[in-house]
Length: 218
Image (tube, rainbow, N blue to C red; front, side):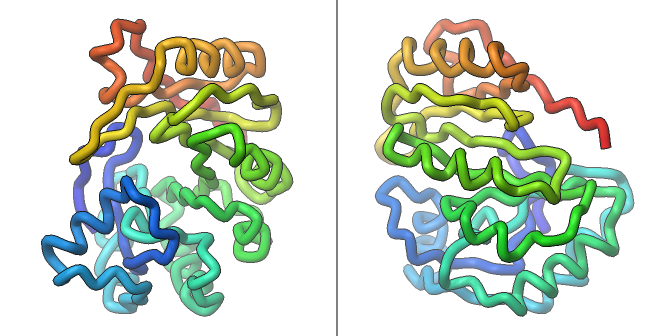
């Protein structure tokens, strides 16, 4: 488990690495190219289960599988069971899971856990099916949407969501979204009473920065 510069979490924990989605902007694949000789095939690392969150006593935000996609079809059910066993041993932490396949999260997360937040990534309006899929999950106090990298205008109904993250495309091909795309999402979130977290990659746009956290009531 590693300290991270990701603004909305404290640690990244990667008991699974590798992904088969093939996103062209993937930062995790770039890291694999530098350190793993380009091997980005999905792998489970059982040694990282106990050598991770259980060693950190201070309550922290933990982003799970930042180097993979926890909802991918390539993820084995037994991997999820083992990860959730560790999650249950660490009630002091908040574990943040983010995926492009929220439909699969409905299969993995059947038991309510107050220390788990579930999120999905939406970059363009064609992916709004993911919003509806994450809304159907009832086993977490916080459901969130990561609009990063925001690549187009999105009109959505954010009711039933507690938190949104908005960010630009970074890395070798950095690209800012249009201001109206960002301000529209802010308006939609305010209408639905959703907390807003703008990543630092948006600072140069000149929009007032909002870095809010969801209110958790259970």
